[in-house]
Length: 287
Image (cartoon, rainbow, N blue to C red; front, side, top):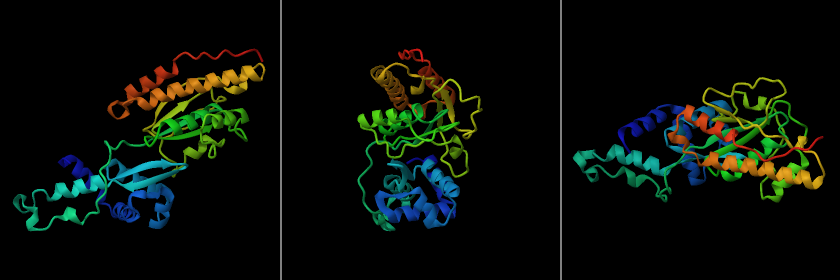
């Protein structure tokens, strides 16, 4: 650990609430705790807890992973041990044994495999949030691993997801238990997760202007025809749905492989726009 990283970690811990959160997570061990439970046990509003958890994660002291529909936060024991080692490495003129090895008081955990990468929140939006955006959410949920948290919403959400889309996702091994049609207003509240990427999947959003999802969000458009536009018989519609799934799967697969941490916002925007301009082989019949 270098001085800059140590200073960032100590700065995050200089706030009493964050210190309480870290101590709570230490007591929970490597399994961590859901964000909602952390807020409840510390006695904080969800938005305040999210703010402090984000600060600890940016400092590299904690790690957020998605398990089903929950976001679990846990202490990065390696980072905490490295911080203590950095603080004590020059103790007693380089002889820490003279004043006690503080690192010995820390529980031993296996070292993490590879460098910790942040989890990015991605929101897919379209008008009805009943097909394309739900499909994209499910695909990213499966391909993104711990690096991405997938969400979807619509400007005018339908009452229920399109049955044939849910059937397709189930047949391909996706977890559809949490998929539902919802308004994009759910992601504009103070306690909503902050979006890193917002990707629209239709040409227009029923004439509505997309709301603000935070200054940090990188936006892009991947216009794709919705299954409601598919004409023809059952077999033809199934083929078109397969093509739609394949197109989304390819784009999202490329997206998840991008070196996001090393690209600036403009470069990321260009990369996403390039994906949106990729040709789609869907051929729609007359309705």
